[in-house]
Length: 559
Ligand SMILES: Nc1ncnc2c1ncn2[C@@H]1O[C@H](COP(=O)(O)OS(=O)(=O)O)[C@@H](OP(=O)(O)O)[C@H]1O
Image 1 (cartoon, rainbow, N blue to C red):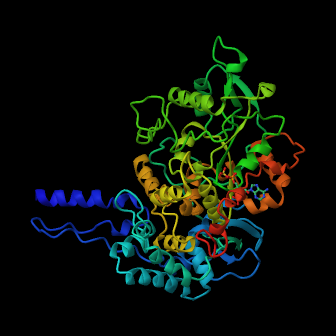
Image 2 (image 1 turned 45 degrees about the vertical axis):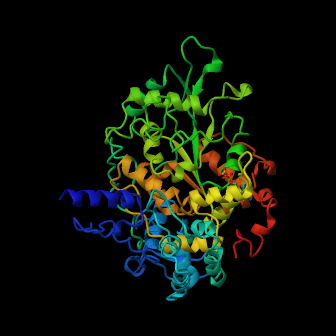
Image 3 (image 1 turned 180 degrees about the vertical axis):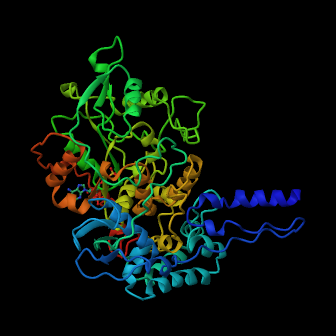
């Protein structure tokens, strides 16, 4: 019995399956029999692409149409969820009602797996066989571990272990690169539009999901889009606690943005919390958007672009607290009382409002942008606890474009004294990046399964979401493009009306138009924005360090 328990515990330590959002079906690996000398069998390789047929026939609400306007192929169960979410995102909220007929075009972002299905075409199996081919090649290298871990990825042993890293270390780069040569182009078509047909859509869920760890009134998720937040105003409060008290009494009503000046201190000590928060996506054009918004006369600047207050980089001042603990995380649904919320807001103001532009000190309203918020599973819940009326802005970029932008950024990021080889090694260890990019993406697709309901926030508690996070982040550049799951979590806690979703491509095509749209959403008075290309923060210059790696056929090329 004891041996059994120990063996079971070892299994859990070796393969902490409950932190693998995509692999929960495998989590019940049978424990070894007590007394057996044989080591526990390795877990089966992760399944190939998720089965698609089941959900999709039931989806009658939307016809996937390629952004180019052509009829798209029929796509699977995950898409159904994405499409249902799209309805939620569409003007007027989710559900089958509402007039307009065949008119609603909604930005939807599909997963890489969906994109593979698209690339494959209706009824085709090419994508699957390509992935299988890669696995077979890995097997033929005779490296079982490479097959298990490198062929499709493995979340065990404290992180994603890639065959690429191992093959590279053991000089077997062929094992990694060889598969890439035979593969077809990476599907790049990850963003579609869904044409919703009147009355046929299946809503995401008519009842708002109950928030189990946030507590309170169950959050705003599932509420239909009612009114836009409206113009913002500023009000001076004695303390953030006073603001939090009023906020908690007023439910989700949008209160004036609080300005608090600590007693006995001068105006330079005044703080306010940001008026609006750009929550992502990383590499979506967030810096450019924020920089331009801050040219608005009603807004002040911040020293840091990213406050990282609600995410992993939250550093509590109390050294006894673990870094990842955030006030309220462990309260099992009790949420925060106004006094605790006041403290949190004060810390947020300190952090986000560090260096207000002196010439604009009277304005005291600003915009924060931390693109990690979208991806960090606890961020929506944390934010909702203290900022139920936040005005959120979300920029979504084609996941493939986003991925390559992310990659270019990382490949520029050598630390002091670090050689490029060392940088590659480091990224390999953390994110399993090198090897051929094509293969990396295909491996990601091969191992992709839709997030579990838990990792999408259904019934999740803080500790569950932290586990999900640890699994996601090991494959960060790929997973950040899986927007559906990320959005679902936000929509559980914030009403649709508070989240403005902008597509990068549209923003890049009409920047001032987007600025006006965002300004309206966050309640700024109209302003004649002009575009300044110096704020773009393009990562292209980094490519120049190693153009051969990014050129066609190079290690980081798209083809
Ligand atoms: N106007 C316009 N036109 C075209 N492209 C634009 C524009 N504004 C921002 N960008 C591109 O957005 C990428 C940077 O995104 P972020 O600022 O969100 O990056 S970060 O998350 O803050 O690191 C970065 O993408 P890449 O150059 O592809 O890496 C920027 O070039």
